[in-house]
Length: 64
Image (cartoon, rainbow, N blue to C red; front, side, top):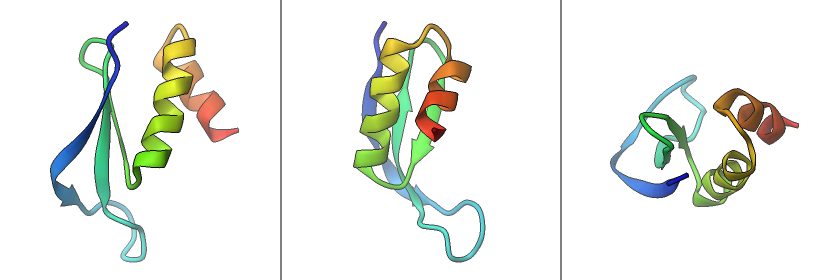
């Protein structure tokens, strides 16, 4: 399972006006991609994704 954390070329503004821009992406395995505003959040999700069998369970565990 190849999962990487990458810095986005430019911040992406998403959500409400007060939300922080997205700056980091967790890519893999395959075409999966989740974006986060901080590297710490991206690292936390990547750790859950490496232990999970699919993206849905990784997201569920990340949000707990």
